[in-house]
Image 1 (tube, rainbow, N blue to C red):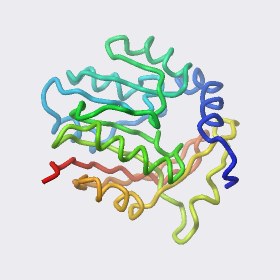
Image 2: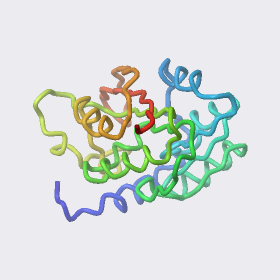
Image 3: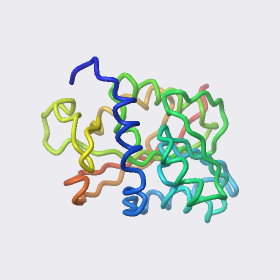
Image 4: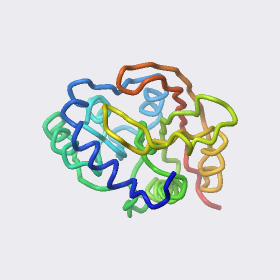
Length: 216
């Protein structure tokens, strides 16, 4: 990848253009690990939805489960639509690269949003996530794995989604564990599923559930 590409601006502009189309399609899917994430969280707990998109289905699902939800997204159109879709939640236009919360959330949730980060940004956001979680807080992370073993994920990171050029990078299980383990994040469970859609093509999804442990 050309290191001079501003991937934040590239992706923000692309997602602004497809926000209404994305909302009508509602690509997000619930799975058993998301249900487990909710089941472990304390009653009326606080959830930060990273890259909350249009608020569907996840922010809406968390509200229905009785949680207090803050959704952040760096795409203005996504935030506008999310406020319309889930008025009971709070939404703010913010990049996850600017998170400055300390010990505030019982759970943090990211469904595919961290695919938009290159490794240096990903590592920085991971530290911000750990800092934002309360002790014993949970982090749910959904990403795509590389489709082939031994292939550099960076090679295919500039791609077309909904006819828009974007940065989207797959991550391996090993990469994710090496990032979060030093941050006192204990891996509780992994869930995998393969899907295929016209807009996103073949996806090898890997979902992680982490728990933040107190630093002794």
